[in-house]
Amino acid sequence: MGKMRISFLIFSAYGMGGTVRTTFNLAQALAEQHEVEVVSVFRYRDRPFFEPGKGVRLTSLVDMRRHRPGYMGDDPEHALPARVFPVADGQYARHSALTDRLIGEYLGSTEADVVVGTRPGLNVHVARQTRRGTVRLGQEHLTLATHPARLKRLLRRTYPRLDAVTTVTEADARDYRRTLRLPGVHVESLPNSVPEPDVGSADGSGKWVVAAGRLAPAKRYDVLIRAFGEVVRERPDWGLRIYGHGREEGKLRNLIDELGLYNHVFLMGSANPIEAEWVKGAICAVTSSLESFGMTIVEAMRCGLPVVATDCPHGPKEIIHDGTDGLLVPTGDVGAISGALLRLINDEGLRARMGAAALTASARFDPSQVAARYESLMTSLVNRRAGTLHRARGTLLGGAYAAKDRIRQGVGYALEGARS
Image (cartoon, rainbow, N blue to C red):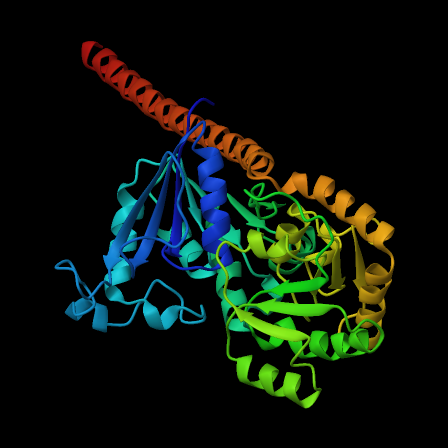
């Protein structure tokens, strides 16, 4: 298979989430050899937060920019409920009869060899509406376990129409194979990709523990702050910086004040790009109760930081080699987290060795390596689909020829009967 035409269908390519970043990373790497487009269902801004990359064509279906003449938010069809996009997907309220129609028209007319959906609701569209002959690939950027039962039932009914499903961890791939049992659908774990940072690696001299991500309950920054309170008792010369925004911000500020850590723990807000902040630190901390993958772990490792992470489902244990390039600790265990941080803080040599190992090990998440695995999967699926269509065409032609033969034979018999 030579050059492929590959299309990614995404909720909004104009946001700041991890799905947008990893989609652009992968699209840019694939665009070095193939024709790649990213189709954004919604467009909320004039320019995306992240650059799609050289060679990647970015288009959108529904313009939600009020200041633009093409604004579609007031379209009467947008006030009608969606019927294809599933109710159980968390973004259902944003979709409508208008998005159903426009997504369907795009999928029914695309000339792409491969269409890639990037969330369950869009994967349902891809499964049901993509034109015949195009490979249909659905990505899972979260985890099957976190989806509501109603959505799982729909995926079990709908996903058999896909050619493949990819997950970001092998643990989630096992869940898909065991729970959904999708006949004829290839299920494979392919991690998110993180490019080599534009900044130099951390030198380990900054006395900062760094964390980054949404200030959301699942990230358990309250546990990290309490653990760092124990660190400060022994090492008051160190500090903790937490980057991100979210609904937990007020609670976390109150906790910092309550524990008297206002001179040691700092909520820094969002930072983009984050790489410049990672390299100011010496250790990354991730204390989540659940991670679908762990993009921040890879980002920090690519900047040369060892990571202390909770051994939560699903991602950290598939990224970190415990004791080599980072440390895994039990989820929610304040003492274990503070102990792991102090182990690295108090041993500069260990910190340097683990940081170097993290830098080397994280190269496997480079977009070029992840894209090569996607390219191999897509090529095999395109070839398989082409073979299936060829066989189907052969069967149809064979049936047509056989019918013609039967007609000829019938005419011959009739002529013989007439002559006799």
